[in-house]
Length: 404
Image (cartoon, rainbow, N blue to C red; front, side, top):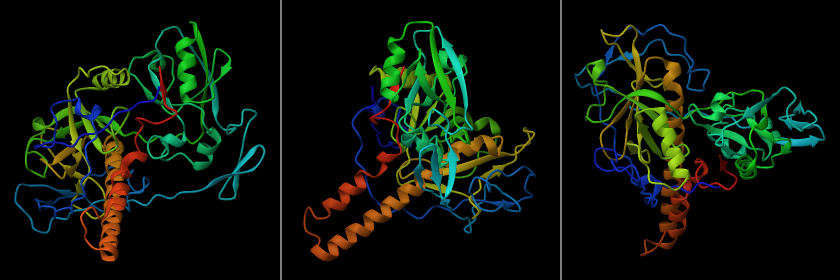
């Protein structure tokens, strides 16, 4: 069954206390010009020596140091909205048994899948599996963002595990994100919806034949982080105890790609996913933030996170500051770069796409007004195009999605 959910703009303060807004009527998309980013304080300090995963992830070259923060304003503070380049390749079918990617074919096995992948079987006794499925093409901009195009092409419409509930039957049996469900009790699965239906109707115990694609470099858009969103400050709080621990999800299963949700813990997110998919009232608390028109505020031009050193902590904490169009700045922190990278990358990807869409909208509107004049109702074509811009990245409402 396909999901059908929508987003809602954040209210004053940047958060929506009613957690049901994202599952109701979609909010209209505004197209204001971003205001200049406010300046905030910085102070030079020696950088902590830590392995740098950012250059390898496409965030520019390694910088000699990070810059530290204090409370005095500095007019030279830089605003950086990161725009990493994304290399794309085209996968085409060259002949039976091979898929060619930039002239380099990959060998396929007897099932038509890359022969470097692995197979396994999972035995399920529980009635509910606790997983959701989508096609690999649905996940190209999210979970499979770093998976080679040739692998995505080979997977075709097969059901990919895009969500696994904590402590579910899927989780306990070793089924993980990105895995493919090939058959249910010996019957081949054709697509996500068929797979979900077969799993619901299959007698227990149930045997699932699964496949793990090669080059499984997944892109996660969620994780547990320390956050601060209730002050006007752009810099990190003065004490580590001022941060709140939340489970942060950018886009995801139950909302649109421009919404960032914060739950108390991963289990609450699992409850929200289950209740939203079943059409029930959401019972858990969630803070919601609209990322449309937002900017990422950093202190360097290399696109790397800021950091703050607390006397009570053994290591510096890394953080980013998101300046939404409405409400207070949103600061998200982790104790290591690796932990911060998934959510930072997800926000960064959306902000880049949002900026590109807004620029295209403004250019189209200017061209329309120049050619036809600023008549009442003019510009409807470009406005319609802009209002539809964000839909390609979300899971919800997609044909070919299924869950059990």
